[in-house]
Image (cartoon, rainbow, N blue to C red; front, side):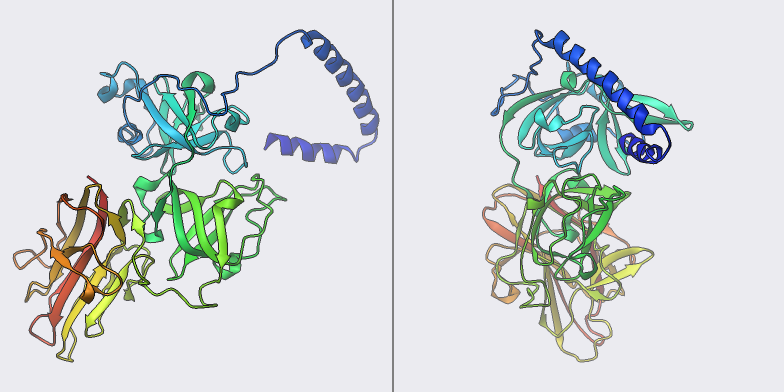
Length: 476
């Protein structure tokens, strides 16, 4: 910013008398300086120790994972890593990760992002063009002793020192990055985790994700990614084919800031971030966006289920993106009414949105069966499921949870196995959320889904309202 302020000031000064003569004199003085500088340094080796293309293993070992390090951070605080009691038993605090975002394109400034199999973290520093040493796809080892950890609006970062500003303690960037971060071998960027908008959550922050069937909303299609005149960072809104939205944020200094956003539909790879709990995406290069297909609404729109669901590594669903009384329709999920025409629907109470199924108020007398089915997971890696359930106006047990390994669109044609899961029931107060606890899904193999099944019948017999919320599926 200082550079551009100076540039503007120079443009103003250029209109003042005597400025050109002054500039010519300064140019002459600067030319003499550089001639002397070149002569003085002509016999000095000015080569930098650039890492080899494929890298060299520094023979270091991580002493904890990124997630373990981040677990010692308290929101809004600044931790001196040397002062974290739980880490004092380690001879050295070292994390290892692969660079998934760097400063080459200008969408990150004086920082880069690394991730391991447990999560991601941002490294702030003062080194210009750090991508030369810490490029996307390169393993790095971070010596964390002597560093600090804080967060920027919820995004955890590592820094090098603290200072006081306006009466508050702040964290500064790492000034000796080459001492703190050792480049390793180049392994290539990790496979992005396939996600849906609703499936993105806290554990995905600072990791590489991929979303399918995405497009820019009409108002943000065919416009520049950011403001290249005023160098302002701008938000452009993305949506999936079910109307779920998320922001794509681009710096005005990114080399692609002046390019036009595509008006098609397709896949986006990006780093997931949050701003005070609101999700947002950042791309590294224009090639992270592949919107080459027809927009939703201009061809055959995808149905809620069009074959085998997308395979996710993990899932977090809190239903907050839905409006009250809206049917749950989001990419990768299946909401199916097997009998009757009632689906799982989003309901909101006291600021919390959840999924609800009920036969209450259905005077047709027809049996009701509705399934809410997750995207797929590879259960060759053991998973653990957790969620919360609640009931209201109890008169029957209408909720059950199942797993299937041959589901494709139609719940009635799949083979299901019922899971033994604690659920809200007759003995629980109305509206009280009952945690399932961790449900270990072990002993399975192959690609499978989890289904939440509601059965009931109005107008009086089986009309309990059942609710589910905060569904999480992750590696055991």
